[in-house]
Length: 88
Image (cartoon, rainbow, N blue to C red; front, side):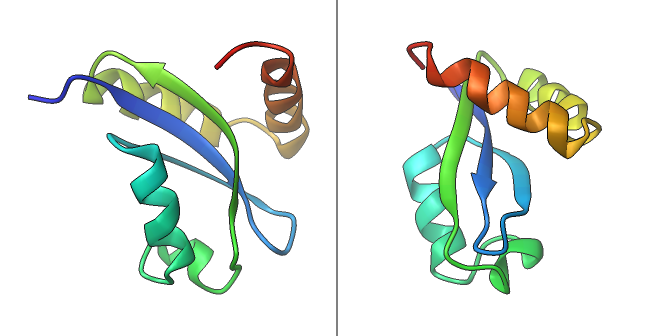
């Protein structure tokens, strides 16, 4: 059983945004940037972590990921900007 799960957004080199979930944000970003992460990010390297949320369970992370993925790019940018003034 995992202790924490994270939902994250990375900014790709082509200025698109990719949303995912993980139990280790730092390791996941390394995987993306090594070219072995998500198929979407492989051709858009490097990626930069721009947002993350801590959740209690994998289930919560998957649900939150689905919600964020349905957001428009404009809504995601607002989410990112609103978190920049907060302590993550």
